[in-house]
Image (cartoon, rainbow, N blue to C red; front, top):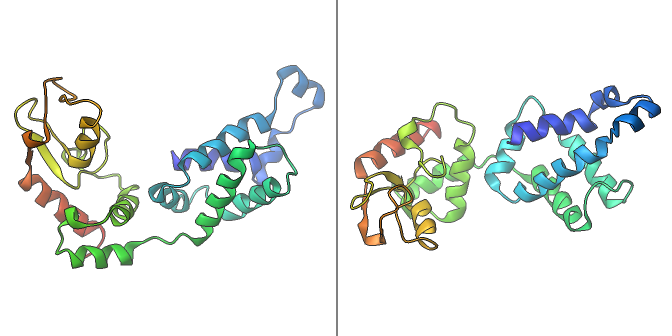
Length: 216
């Protein structure tokens, strides 16, 4: 998602954007308005921009990410030079650009935090867990068995739904699901928190893989 947004953002506001300029008569006939394409992209940045994992993915995109382009659009929005976004999105985008400029990959802090809990990621706070997910978000070789089958995210606390489908899911994901629907999302059978059994062997394998990736 991040790399796709960056690519189209650069095409619309970067040096090659002049290639999109066409004769006024043709533009009118085609109803071609680049701004109408740019505005929803900026809105998506606003929606996703508060997520640390998303910011990490944006800055890690070596092909298309250029902070200067984000700063330029941010200035235009602040000065109201272009009607690019809804007023409600303006401050969100400006804040996201500021966060991008100040964002640093949290690898050192993550390593220290993992060491403090002796490698048991279940004991980490939510911010550190988000940082770990950010570091791993661009990994392309994640074993499928490590991914939660509902959200396709790396399972940090895998549990087996022993009394129902017996599928392994991430505890955070299934607990969020059970708040709204007390049924196994696969078998649709009744499911309680007490039915969840820790998948310790798989968790050990996942933690070893994460330790290798963050170079502990």
